[in-house]
Length: 301
Image 1 (tube, rainbow, N blue to C red):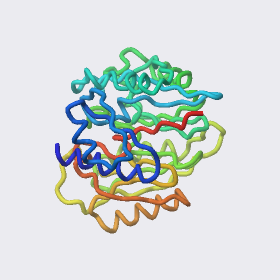
Image 2 (cartoon, helix red, strand yellow):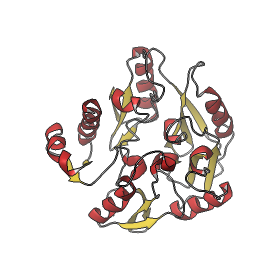
Image 3 (cartoon, rainbow, N blue to C red):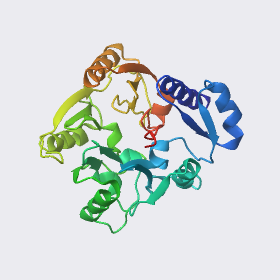
């Protein structure tokens, strides 16, 4: 637990170099959280069961002169773990920030969706078209709900895989938009268990058109190889990074060659942004990463 908390504090401190940070903590942990962070970080007491605010928190949308937060009805990734507090996190954040809350007509998580900001969304069927979130709902029904709720006009589906991890394979460990029309994909080595999932997704996305009819460009970002003995849930994905104002905060895994190559690729994909890279192994052992543990909120209009 101490290692996990240090990873969270390290992420918060890194992001605070670029933009304001609010850290959520249970009441009993507020004092220690403040001690671990720099003074510029605001620690707010909100009851939580776990740390993955990408999934439990709201996904923000912008309208003409307004901002709102989508509550995706978090249910513990299909009732896989206790979520009495986490199911309320989105509501608590939006109430505290006095931002309009929109309750989604489906159940999901922020890590299950990836958008380009211009009408295109990518998601895995394994996470959303799943009876543990949306029983009795078809892919077409869920797609219509995503379009209505998030304002997207094109949804690209890849298969993913059910039951292999607690999220049923979130898209934010596989593929991220770096700009409209460009997707960077976490490319596993040939012996990794995700190879078939990756190949299927790459085949679909490599031939897909975005909301504006543009063929997607796929950039491969190879995963590390030399990382020693790790648990089966260890998330060795460089694409689970967080984009900050003027920078990118991303993980490294101890494979010096792969780490340097990943940083170079991300630097090329985000010209003009500073790339900050550091280990978050305790989070990775829990199946998540920097993107999973963060949620951006747009500046108020």
